[in-house]
Image 1: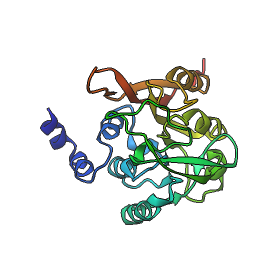
Image 2: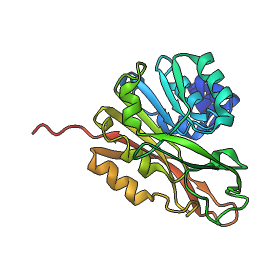
Image 3: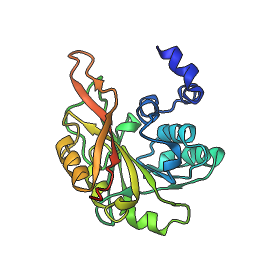
Image 4: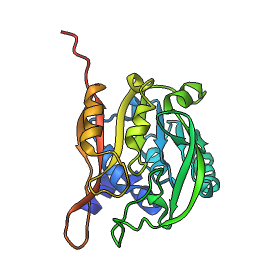
Length: 241
């Protein structure tokens, strides 16, 4: 039961109280992910710090590098990171190559994306564009290699509203040092040109990761259809035979 889970995992109560991403806590709080396996958390698409709160609960001593290009969220994210331990906010987006591109800020802040929202909006996914701003994009592997905080092995969390493929393409240089990747995937076409689950899954397989877990999907209220879900990949064991 929910209450039993809270009793067994006291830090989960803190995540719930602080507005952290409960689903991601439950997804990652598993025997396949011992906390000592993670040297640095890379939070790509930090938004309002929902996953920062989870990472602090599960990996209290681990530095967090949080990437969030929305300038409206910078002050609160910086406060959250500095109040909770070792970490740094990088106010930029991650992609395949360095660039300056538009970020579509939506009225519902977690739906903001570097891809233009499609017409699939409504009560389940309010992605109406509020404003569009220009933001800086860098390759994740370039930024991580230049960071004094970053220590492998890495846990890479990606929540970038359809831009996951671009982030992964720009992370190939550090993938050998990544132990776990947790990624949100859309089942509905919310953004023009978004990555699909098949594309992400094949990329992970090609780079030596295996699918180990799937989070509770978010469903359309009216029909029960899956809208989006979180997936966790673990670096597969190296075959020495």
